[in-house]
Image (cartoon, rainbow, N blue to C red; front, side, top):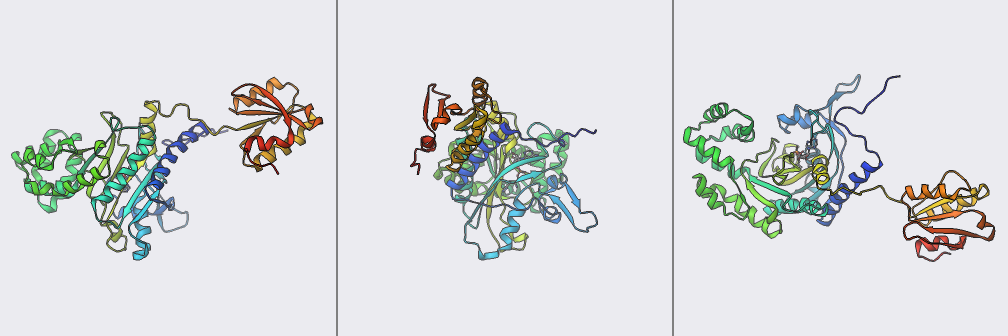
Amino acid sequence: MPTFKAPKGTRDFYPEDMAVRRRIEDAWRSASIGHGFEEIEGPTFEHLGLYTVKSGDGIVSELFSFRRSGGTDDYALRPEFTPTLARMVAARGGSLPRPIKWFAIPSHFRAERPQRGRLREFFQWNVDMLGLDDPSADAEVLSTGLAALDALGLRPDVATVRLSHRDAVASALEALGVERESMYAAFQLLDRRDKLPPEEFAKKAGDLGLGPDGLAAFDRLARIRRPITVDPAEIAAETGVPVAAFEPMVALREALDDAGVSEWCEWDLGIVRGLAYYTGTVFEVHETGGGERAIAGGCRYDGLVELMGGPPTSAVGFGMGDVVLGLVLRDRGLLDGIEPPRPTVFVLVADDVAERPAARILASLRQAGVHARRSYRATRNVGKLMSEASRAGAGHAVIVGRELEEGMVVVKDLRGGGQETIPVDSLVTMFTGGDDE
Ligand code: HAM
């Protein structure tokens, strides 16, 4: 018989793993709802063209694409959600009330080499706000993400938002001598600067029109990391770039301050992000000083809805994956002790004749909304049954046995100790606190 393993880069979620996943998703969902976002979903696979049109080379090279046997259309499992979201907004044209505030928690598929923090299937919380062309929208999506991190126990000393602004960096690069047409190539170079040998970096910078002075300034710019409270004018002075280039960062800084999230944020002008549809604000959330990959990444993508055939629509959002976040939380003990839901009551059948009454008791508890489980074997060895109830983590055990002849059952408190014999008719009231009609 062949034995099968889960495909490389995928995960099996056993009950205890599901409990952890639910904890993370609950934090995501409640932060979204609390900040006024509504939940959406889309298909797990899309037409291949949706991604080749604008996702960026990195993501396209990692697609799981396929064609139905006998079919002619090409599809791909979704590697990210933003193209689907933009398509959905475009499909409703101008009829959606603005601003549009949506969130989703889809699964994604990327044919990456599996490694720490990178899998081939993962979940990603998406928070997106469209139709409000103002830095307050950038601040609103960011503060939603940070509210979830806070609820999960992370603080600004553990997670940092590194922000940059593509327009500001483009103006700065232009001031250093990079042509407008070469800007995309310049961003790619900025993104890859730490992966390239210095000579290759210098050669590519030269191709962009940067001489030795321009190259040194480019390098200085890429390494700028300052608290968000630093006035962009100081960064201008330091890099020799005219202060006007950093104008877009001033409004962003104010909006983040108004949203009360400045202490989480810092400028990092080396943050570019690989996705080709990004404009304006770009940011990543990282474990402070840690070696993990980004916990989240986001941006403005003002042109994407139009590219999908919709009206011009400003847009900003981020994606936060469950994998890196899970590693950061686990390393800090913040996922310890998370268990699947535990029953309030565990019904024990301590006598063969009690089988059917026990089934009825269980049904009445469940119909009243009480989380009740049962033992599936009947034995007079109550001790054995009791250990089953304890293993299940139940609060109380209800022993259905000989006392039933007098219309009574034994209720044992498994946490506080002690037990009492009560009329079977008052059992539901005991666990609901309500009127037992
Ligand atoms: P992204 O930077 O490609 O952005 O992904 C965002 C986050 O998803 C990453 O920071 C990481 O936590 C997680 N992630 C990405 N790839 C993997 C992987 N192979 N395994 C595990 N986790 C992964 C986007 O996807 C954008 N569409 C986000 C966005 C939403 N921008 C605007 N709105």
